Length: 217
Image (cartoon, rainbow, N blue to C red; front, top):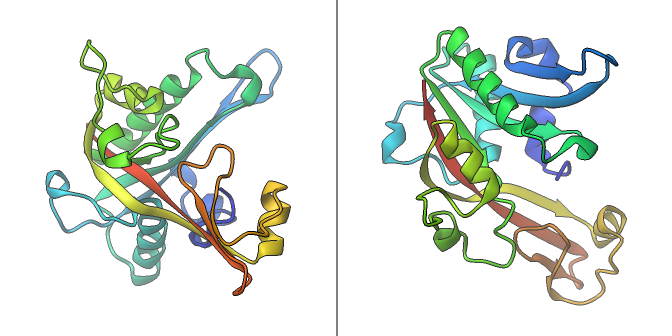
């Protein structure tokens, strides 16, 4: 997931340009980091309820960079990542980080936090159906979407081309450990959809959908 080229407009610059929008959770007993949350302020001229851009995560990163270069005043904040240390997952830290992100966004004077959420249970499923599937209690079937809705988020729409990763076949072999020697769709563990391999062109492309969630603060 770190091979998305739009990420280069954020990672490496986040503490220079958007330090107040980055959060780190630390174990007070050991001093070790346990989780982090990244977000960016950006402009958005439309109405969130009418839908957010198809390019999802990539759009949020690029829009924030364009706004900073042009001097545009941000109107909303987009989450980009919440990561919990693997050995501490399943203990509610993700929900605590999301709550902290909501609180930080409000403290910065913004009323809207949006998030291009990666629905972790969507592998091999139709994202347009899965994004709106609910349990009997009315909460989303997807665990990560469920965390957002419990914290007050509302699902807006699917971003079908949220992240795009392109590389040579050698790149993909290095990233995944898979041979990438057959043309067509390649199943990569943990990817939400197939990676399309073009052997003749020495390229493979992965396009990941995300689900836009809106937190009105």
